[in-house]
Image (cartoon, one colour):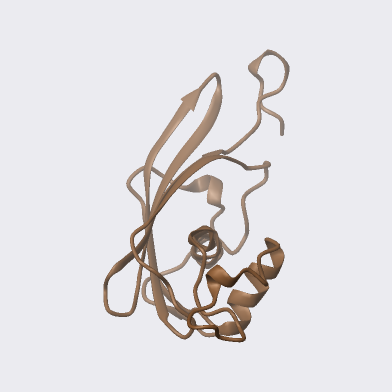
Length: 158
């Protein structure tokens, strides 16, 4: 699978993200293998909705595949992983604006739109945009993650 770096990368953790920080852009190809792997993982490999014109193999990516773009972007910028503490995916909202097709080069970019403390727990909000090779918007994604779980009395687990 080909991944092309369009910006810089670091060796920090995801938990080091700061408000206003920009991620990407990063390009990757939506290969047949990547699509089949993802559809098989979510139990949709045989769903005809992801095949165009009766094709024998999947040709169209489901909107939830935006998570693959997110993982690629985070892994590229934070190869050390989530951080010394568990990170919990708290909620997300994804809007599909167009269709991503097999063989298309996709570009994902993102930003940390907010970092805050709620009930003594650190949270971070991410916004990602995935565009097709012609520049059209495919997916618009908003995500909130809890960066470190609090334990008894509001103290953080270390």
